[in-house]
Length: 410
Image (cartoon, rainbow, N blue to C red):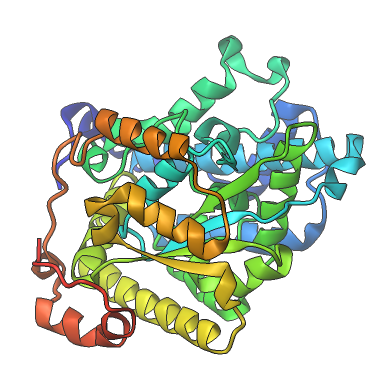
């Protein structure tokens, strides 16, 4: 992966002064103080989040060779999460009835990354009965006081930085995934405020943080997930929330504990395509921040993670921990061939109404957003030290169980 000239030159600023750490500070206490000073607020809520925060920041600093841009983006991500936490805690204190809001029958898209979850999210968002969180809401769940923002920047403009900057730093990203401030977005962004969520794991292969996360198995980030949905819903017409993240596949039982009447669409696609594609896009995310990415190590981690999560869902479905009438399957190939019929079938399985008007909206949306609109995402398994045959063997348990259509390698 190559970097654009402007980005290489920016990164040289760090090298010119003995390292980016001399330009951009990632001191954990200093960032806490900055977030408090910039909002005029001091209460971060319960202290149980501090361990995750301290481990994350220490691991980013000690375990990762961040570029100058990487340190700048990291400081921005952390400060935004801290500011949002302060603002959300303040909003909940000022309006405690927010926490009485009931999140009724949300619809969740879960499945492997790169299995059609994003286009399905955008198509389901065309149904007026669904309410998807938008990127600008995820970037700023509470409108920051104008006095805390420079140059009169809006929540939409904050979200442009939070989303579209990735495509400017790493243009290859756009062919794989469009980031736009006004599009429906993964609700995993809400969970960044807890600092123990997969949001941070996706951005950083920080060894110490990963070891801590896999050892602790914390679920408190889902408490924040619910609080922010309640906050966004308060005072609004209540539609069915539409949620999505591949990371939720490992935590469907936790989500069902929060939302017992949740309905789930599990997406399916041949791992021969999803695995290399996930490695590629995760590599882009990390390459935008660090001097080097070990794609082969990343490949092994993703293979293991996908195996574990897919087996877990199969077991939970077999044991009826996920009620059969609350989950439906959508196969990527079916969605590509007949999107209207495939979504209608999932609605029927889940007992939801599918209108002809909604079907027209799906067709109209796809006319404006054809596949590969921003170019073709190119990747191969062998680029990451994997073989097609090995992926086939490793995931036969999954493709056989669900009857997943096998595809040619990319």
